[in-house]
Image (cartoon, rainbow, N blue to C red):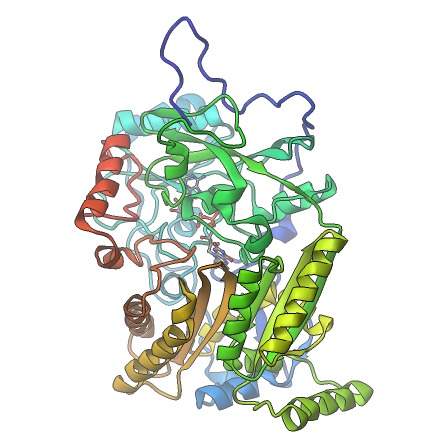
Amino acid sequence: MSQPDPRPDRAPAPGFLAAPPGALVPPRRRPPTEHEHESPDAWGFRDTYFRINERGHAVLEGNRYELSGQELTEFLPWMRRSFGVPLEPAAARPSRYPPAVPEPRHNPAFRAELEKFLPAAAICEDPLARLRRGHGHTLTELYSIRYGRLARVPDLVLFPRDEAEVERIVQAARAHGACLIPYGGGTNVSEALRCPPEEQRLIACVDLRELDQLLWLDPHNRMACIQAGAVGRHIAAQLRELGFTLGHEPDSLEHSTLGGWIATHASGMKKNRYGNIEDIVLDAEVVTAGGRLARAQALPRESTGLAPGRWIFGSEGNLGIVTRAVLRVSPLPELQQYDSALFPDFASGVEFLRELAHAGAAPASVRLLDNLQFQFGQALRTPRAGLAALRGRAERAFVTRVRGFSLEQMCACTFVFEGSRDQVRAQRRTAARLLRRHGGLRAGAENGRRGYQLTFSIAYIRDFALELGLLAESFETSIAWSQVVPLCTAVKARLAREHAARGLPGRPLVSCRVTQVYATGACVYFYFAFAGHGVEQPHEVYAELERAGRDEVLRAGGALSHHHGVGKLRQRFLPRILSPAALEWTAALKRGVDPDNVFGAGNLWRP
Ligand SMILES: Cc1cc2nc3c(=O)[nH]c(=O)nc-3n(C[C@H](O)[C@H](O)[C@H](O)COP(=O)(O)OP(=O)(O)OC[C@H]3O[C@@H](n4cnc5c(N)ncnc54)[C@H](O)[C@@H]3O)c2cc1C
């Protein structure tokens, strides 16, 4: 990526505006319909949420997912036993959304400039629209909008319709001293969108939702140009119709955007086959305070000095606005198969994954769930009757009595194999061989399929649990293979100690899963929850405990984050992992690229 050539005898670099010869230019896609709208104070779609029905069982409302509408008779009893608290529906604490929204600040000169090129509908001061753009999906943020308030939210929300309008917004902000924060899907879990309370300037959120088009697809060269505000589920659906996929499937796919993925350095569940976002994006166009970073074309690879386009990964809205990107696309796989396995314990599962990664035939996705997560998945099963129940009991007896697995130790692994028939066959053969070596037991395609289809529906449980007084959140890291098991043990022990030291009610739940594998190590997710009944400001206690968990991750040699990013949540830990010169490099880059701090979200490093 380079600045447009300033010499007058050459045309400026055109950017990715023109479709290359032979590319398909699809018609404009319809805008999202009403039923696709999101909940204002909880994760996901408005029509989908957990509730307790008249028989006292948890049910997922709506009809989007396989779990929807099913009475989950085991779920609440399992939660009560596990947390050691009653979880009475009558004691539920309904959301008090919306909170009071801070009054907007004004900047008449900036506003007058905006009105010269934006229609009235693209400049929004609505309090709830401003509120939504002032947070992501951390537990603390959700707690604040339901039971407290946010100290500062954007004063304006802007909806540019094209790149030229984005450029003019940035120029106007620079000229008139406004602060800008780019917004994609608002799904981050790093407090990246939280407005710095000390910011005195007007804060305008630049919502990219109108820049949501697949601009062109070049099937021959396997590239597509997509605008940054496009939402994952729309990108996936549109590419699928054309026979292609990005292969980037974060668990937030339904609501997160291409620009957000780039800005947070995201990773999807199928990264083993398709790569992380930085492997998939060939190049991106970015509007910075100094102008538009653009280049004529995206090429397979180049050696042309420093590549500013690479600095945009993980920039978290601090350096500019990504407006479009050229990405590598892959043809839809010939075959997709699920499978699952059981291991006697977590350590054997981790060794299996390590050898699978080294064998070079890892499935598109493989996940290892510890015993608690395995039990959690079982608690979400609907009751089985007749033959299915008999079969269930027989399988259980085989696993425990014949194979000697302990119900309190065993853990589960789920697989998605993708590729050509030959590739899938090779992946399966390798997995089967290593499974035998590590004492694993095949647990069937259906369990594997179910595990993956639960991904999108279990994301709704956290906000349901909050109503029942449970505080829950996940955090992730990456770590070398040799440290995976010690890390998991240390984090679980530390959170249990911190919980006990504060005399918090009931028992804490800490579980983990391995979600992405590399030759050198793995990505590990922790899920931590406790009952906040009778606890003053439980979300602050949660934040304290999560920081303790993060401290333990760093002590064990783990990454500050594998893919959620830094935002403001993990900023304080940066000096533990970066040298002073490395921190100053980040600060100097920011000063150089954005001397007036137009992009003032305050993420990453703030000296
Ligand atoms: C249930 C759930 C599951 C999740 N699963 C995953 C997962 O599997 N993998 C993963 O990586 N993450 C995951 N996340 C985290 C989150 O979805 C990602 O961080 C995602 O990339 C954020 O995208 P977004 O469009 O929502 O960005 P936003 O939340 O809107 O913004 C995030 C940051 O990016 C900046 N930004 C947004 N758009 C642009 C742009 N066009 N130009 C410049 N900066 C921009 C914002 O200013 C902000 O700093 C999950 C979150 C939730 C709640």
